[in-house]
Image (cartoon, rainbow, N blue to C red; front, side, top):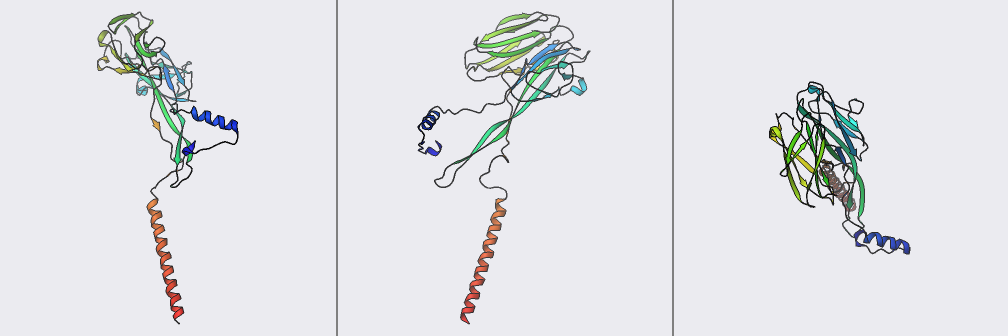
Length: 314
């Protein structure tokens, strides 16, 4: 009940419903818009379409940004038919179109979505008055990123991480789209992925436990995944790139984010939506006008009184 008011409904059923709602009320955070790219890393050969990368979102539409050097490199982000795309919806499959004879390397695409989230403001009077609650909406932005890697010869691995609550750990998935096996070491154990194959290794992690997995491979290849396994609420798995990746013969790998969506910055949209309280830039001007009116009014009263006294004296 608002302001601790003791309210009794005239209808007994309404009173029972109100009591139930009051007893079962819980304070929870507003859900954020979700946005995920699956998988977050793909690999292959130049001259091929690398992918697909599937968009998972509850937003009506997301914007798609190509690699920053797309104009110079000729790399495009396309749909299943090979047409360049600048926007996508839930379930759309995106591909990296890498021109043939492009030097071994890596490129990233980014997607972004903006949705409205509810906001509110409570206005309270100076005395014993009922609080007035105003509701409106604000905009929240989320983003996600996926990376493609290609190599002319040798292994072409793409590594991603995803929490596995059923198994109580984190799944590290390695896909090798090269023509040679890819061997890496994880948690003290060596794993070999044949050419054209995909393998998943589950590393046990306790609930709420922080982890830091470093994957090492040939030619100085290094990939690190860090995070906290939080199956009660959505967690995240982050990948930290190593400076030693650049220049090796398998290209720079990247798995920017796990399946949990990347959360972006929230942009406030309060101005103009809800009533404002307190002062503003116009307050000094209004005060000056009010003082001026008081002075003019006081002067008029003084002159009128002088005139009245003079008339009475005659």
